[in-house]
Length: 315
Image: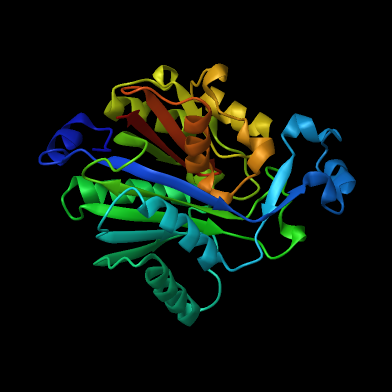
């Protein structure tokens, strides 16, 4: 389903069934603040050689959560579960699972209790930074497509505990969570067929201080075109990570996305909610301008060294 080599793809897709994304939902931290409330904003511009123009970067609002990460995850998960019934598998994604091993077990136990699901398979996805959620969705689609699960709940959640970490040279971070269900049939509400995925890894740029390699974005997009049957330019919307506007737009434009298709309205409205951004943008884009049946959207997550892109067809 996801391979770029035609021979490998032909063999791998035998017996593969369609998969659908339903129940996309998100929850943000309850406290809404403006970028100007952060201490040291002027020094940040100076240290990074940036003009003191928040609007140019898309610096706007951000959300702060007071409760634990697991509570954010549970809130988003419950919202997603309204679209489906039974869940066979759970994939939980986070850039920072808090605490030690015992804390992880207790957090997972609480999440299962809060949602009432009884999956036969659970997994955690991390290390991919802000591409972890789309990575988890791709893994869930593989489980469902190959008959290993009928429905998989995928959740991502992250939060910071103080202001000092939020302001980075590439984004302003918000606390929040997002979730969706990947299943063998579409659920209630807006639903999308997972038409394919394109991924790429660039080892030499895999560093927090490195820039996004244009070749990596282009390789992933070519792979997506091969498996989905549509070029990036043929998607009605491209839903990226909510990093600073010039970075987000440049990365997607280098991959062939028309400027008019790149959904960047949430950069100043939501901030960068770690790996949740593409699905947050899917929900908000659908609410602002409903997508017609058969239209395609592209979800994209790009960090230095990793690119994951998904093509979704509205059903």
